Image (cartoon, rainbow, N blue to C red; front, side):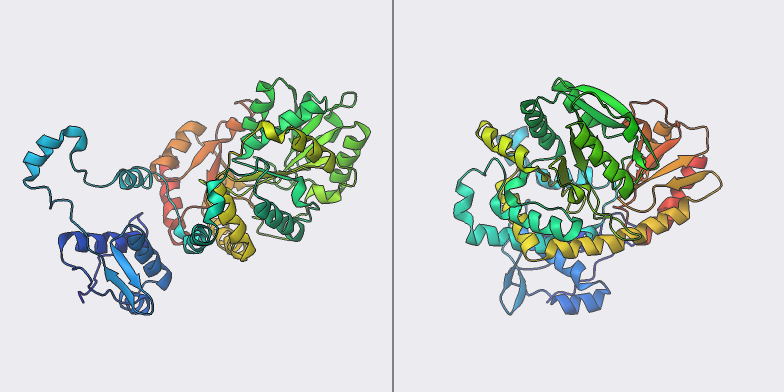
Length: 473
């Protein structure tokens, strides 16, 4: 058994498990590790390298998925039979000429090239999600439920996932609904398109939106022919007294964590908003996009749970609490609106992967999702406090510091928000000007939204110090 002694770079942006993966992969391809050679156990390698067993398992899992190693039950991991890229083609230069430029052997696969191209751009933290548990659910779907994958998904979403969502929402957010009231789709914007069709069936052609607010949703309603009324947001949320009082409407709000201000609507104002909807025969669209990620104080119950007249549509998404590339969003419709959707559902096909829906249903059924939420609350609250400490300076002031995955930072300097965001990006930090939520109007030019959630906790102090130096410069 060859000793595994990788040179782990503590200052590299590349996670430890990928550095270990790189080392073993290179040893296999170079022939230093030979076919059927046994690898150290997870526990032994963890002890010898001073890395966590999770880190070792992630590296081994990635190597196994790509075929460099294989596992034997009750025995361990072994080196697979791997043909190195430089062998088996005869003379390499001659073969490359015969195959032609397009078919010449690549240094790495297109997927590897994509990873190399994208991962260094921004920080990412593997501790934010346990892909091993997700993989177990994927494998279970493939091995035990594979016949279901030969058929298209229900346009309303898989019943198994709708059931798990309804159960989870009642326990965590106080949302009262049945699976028949839930519609699943790929992303909030696709959900909004469905909602626009339902509202038109109800003869509602006017939408009030928060200002500042989430512009992509505003644009969808505008493109679908709705008239739009921007309504100012204050410390208590949207200005209810400014909502239409003489025309049947829908209003799009995020009462538990308004984007981008972070305003929270008090319960008294929520009842006022419900009363407006009843008196004006209107609909409230409640966007609860990251309500689970509230770090201080008790979670705020959803507006939908207060609704007794069927006036609230509840909107949610898994992109923040799982991983951003999984575009699974949903809406909970009042019973009458759910009946309208069922009457038109055959006009649509499901845009969300059936495989991912079934995997998520299992992930929730086994309690993995709930465990992940608890983990994220602890991890993100620590990150948030660390970032706030670093950015509370003589020329920077962080706000919106109790929930979500980002904070607003106001910077007192001569640089524009675009220049400040470019400085952040050069250091691998995602940031956008707050002006994107207002179309560029009435927002301080040096105010920006900084995403801290993917920065590894142990690196925050150093990275924030470098960011401040960059902004000062």
